[in-house]
Image 1: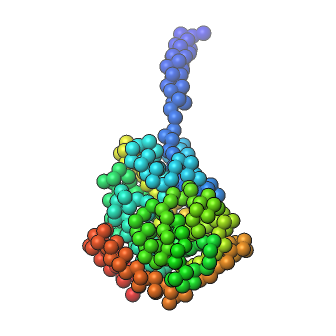
Image 2: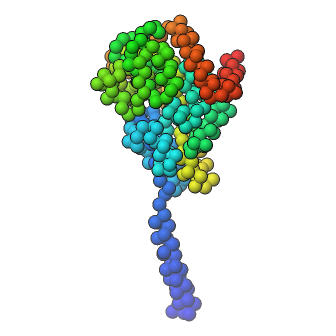
Image 3: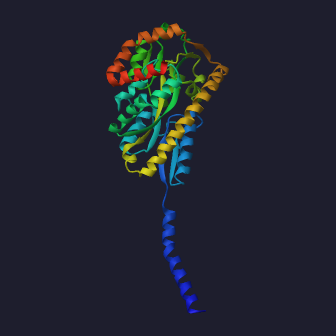
Length: 338
């Protein structure tokens, strides 16, 4: 063997031995794990969108970031997950904007009864300057808002009677979210409004602790409320957004590249989720009818009566979120309706 060959082999062996610890170290580096909590079941529109987000993040990061989707309120109701995010004990969640009002008062804007006439208006305002302004206020409370998803227009179900006029709400024990606007709105309309976490709702309906609830068609179907509710009244009384939020403590530790991966995935998931939710809503209504729910549509004249009855509630929302923000929202809507 020549001196050159012996030197080459020795050099190669030395390089291999030197590289071995670094290769082992690279294998030991674990991907960044992101716990993403949500309230609905895995096969719901919410669950499908979280999976879409997770797949997007893993692919875009080359496997360096992985999302663990945890549904069915396994990490607790929205309010509990929000506190976990604020404290840095959980990374991400998607939930109702309504349960964020105690953290960011401007979120109450989206609880305004009959604020939007259709999904086009909702998209334009939520994705525009008004929606961004409201979302940005979350950071002072320890959260970072990424995007709004669609929960949808909310409708009433109950086990007592069809709601065909304003007076039909009298005395119905109606579960509402833990949110003052919802409480005040339904009390004003005559219902006995009962605040309750979503995770407790099915059992409460089953045991008749409450008579009814209000949610979009998709949630009524995926949560199997048709098993414990006879009447579905199409009221479209509130357009309800979900919001994808991140722990600010955790977000601030991420690199810009990591933040961009999450933001890009969030925007892609928003487009996927809205399309999926809207397609499912039509199918959900037909399926709820097929499963035996008695469905009626609230006449426009009764919607107008409800809207009029809630004028004081709307004035209170405007005062709470700030008249400037309220006026900006109304101006945006007026421009869309021209």
